Image (cartoon, rainbow, N blue to C red; front, top):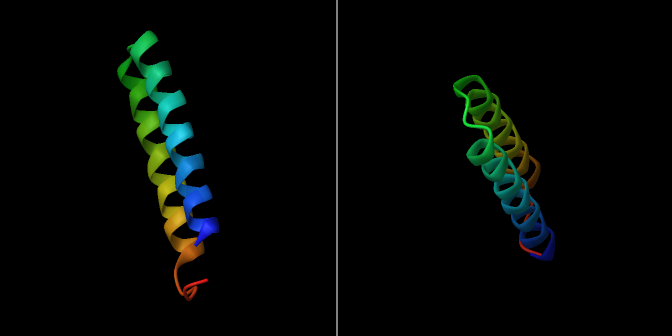
Length: 55
């Protein structure tokens, strides 16, 4: 359970940092890369915890 909370916290920190970047540098191409990065990180987080039982 603690691993999932830490992964969620890390994802939220990454999303927060990238959102600040997009706010200060408002470009469409940068927004697309940030969105792609968050999708890949989210998929990896979900996929790495899939199949694990409760701790």
